[in-house]
Amino acid sequence: MAKHLKTEFLGLCRYLQDPHLVARFQRTCGVQGTFPRRCEEHNGDCAKDDLRQRSRPVQVERSPALMNGAAQPTAHSECSLQETDSRGTLKPLRKNSLTGDIGQEFIIENRPLFYLFTFGTELGNEMFFIIFFPFLYWNVDACVSRRLIIVWELILYLGQCAKDLVRWTRPASPPVVKVEVFYNTEYSMPSTHAMTGTALPLSLLLLTYGRWQYPFVFGLCLVVCWSLLVCISRIYMGMHSVLEVIAGFLYSLLILTVFHPALHAIDHFYQTYSYAPLVIVALHVGLGLLAFSLDTWSTSRGDTAQALSTAMGAALASHLNHQLGLMPDPPMSHLPFSIPPLSGALLCRSLLRLLLGVAVLLATRALMKALTIPLVCRIFGIPCNDVRKARQLMEVELPYRYIVYGTVGFSCIFLVPLLFVWLNLS
Image (cartoon, rainbow, N blue to C red; front, side, top):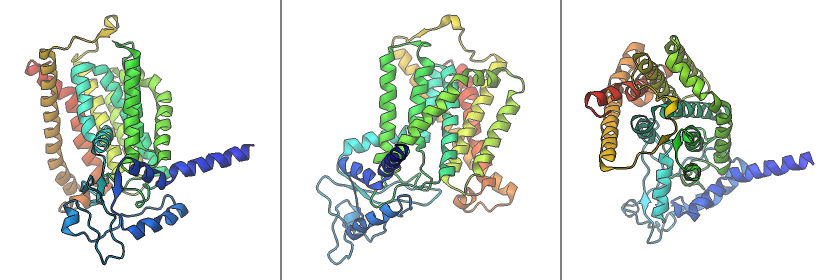
């Protein structure tokens, strides 16, 4: 009986890991590849033999007509491109500046789904976090924002470390169409997008329900919609198999089960203990060094250091705020908070804080990037004429991430709120 269940379970895992399952879902959603026909037909056997073997996109010569979006098969080509219908558009992918991977062209037949899942995948990318956490901190609830940053840091760190330990590569292409290519060089098991897309909305519900007055059903619907959108978008983008997304979802639930009860204690320690800054810096730098030692270079190492350094800067800033008596948490007697009625003045003030604050954070990030890389290269005697090659070295990437994003996190929690006070926007 146990042996039969094990066999069935392994068979189910192989099915959920099959790249052809991802490819079928993509075709159902209107995503078509421009793979050479013969190469696409014969790749299936290879994928079955080794589901995790990395397959680079096939490079084919394209005519000007193809580049303009009209897929015209070449008459004498041995591996001609698949034809597109009138709804199809060939779209090149954005380039990853660190890897030089420009991806492949693909055809989108259902634009609403393409935009929907593009939005869904952006819910797990840097630009969303640089807007979401500050908005929550400046306009809604500073306490909830601080604790969500801790959750985000834990989820990304443990997820990226798991990737470097399991070392599964992305789904084979072909048959999978790589709609997104930015993270293609990273390992894929588990999906950290699925992890953050599950952990953040669920933690937001757990941290705010009872603290704020709103219907529980509303919060639950937000969790379900947010999580489903992010998880499904990763399959649509061709970045993960169904198994990897499910694993990410379950892994995030496990992490929340362990760490959510400790969030209050961690946040309280960061704010109140006199030696907290020393512990914060030592812990976050130590975790970064450990993550960088798990495997060879990939963009995931930078993402790990980025999450750790941002959380480190935010934790140091929250400690300083508490010591100076700035932005104190409201007393428990004021709970639960009621959602204020929306008015034009409230919306304009919140939007102004968001736009001004995010502009400051982006300017800070750009300035620190411009200063840090040449400085670090000079300190370690590394040529900085090739930034891509230099950033693949731990001596450059680790201090670069910690200095730049530590400053961004510190600015978000301490400096920007001071600016709001000065401008009478607090």
